[in-house]
Image 1 (cartoon, helix red, strand yellow):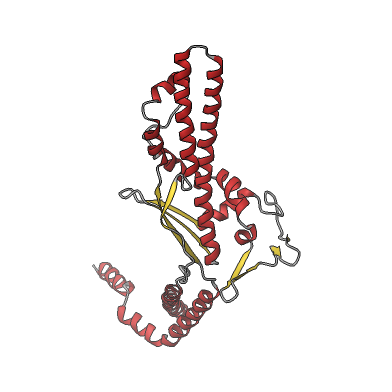
Image 2 (image 1 turned 180 degrees about the vertical axis):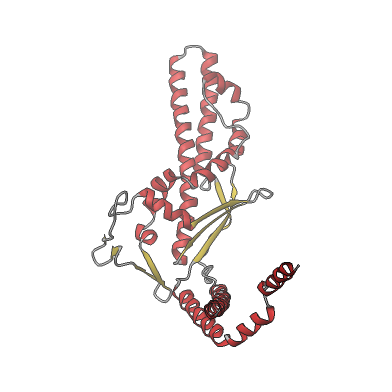
Length: 313
């Protein structure tokens, strides 16, 4: 019975005494305040050291040229099938779905985006001066005085950043999403320079439209060449007449392809040079550091108190 009573006393003694904790924190209030202020100052310095980042955004819609091409070609699909030529169906959204995947691919970046951007703007950027609209590069990476890459590297990196390495960095700047209800597509680029961000959005839209326009144009030109060849080979007037009609419609298709500047995507809202930054959220960073500082200082005061108390006992 006495042993049981002793165990209950010990359990009670081991329970957390909220009054004691409050007294400990009150006594260590200056330590808590000092540490919180110090960490908050570190947060302010850190937030101020982060460069401003601007986001240029474009809202796009599928221009769906295939529907107009299909209407122009009318009832020639069956005849084209007999001749071994594929004409577009009403599924004009196929290019849109493919284009969204294409934009996020390494091959599109390497062949269409990389040749149209200035690589140091992606791989060596340090800061942007809004007064002079000039970019500063990391001098340990790219030397502007000699226009040469001077960075240290190790395999698999190269002196000049490769397409694969650059692509991994570029993906961090790119955002692409689709509203399933409206079908609108939002394409955005983040960069320290709002001018570069806008330029890159335009490059992506122009290049993806040009890629699929040239692809369909090439296929149509091959079809025209094939039809001309078949016309010259056949001697039957009925077949010649049918092939001539098909050739005429395929030529119309080529005209429609050439006439569509925005072949896959058209602008609902074009990109702009943004005046307000999108990042960093300096106020949020400072608040986060303050909360972190407060929690760490409280933990420090409590650990310090109970560590000293244990040494005494």
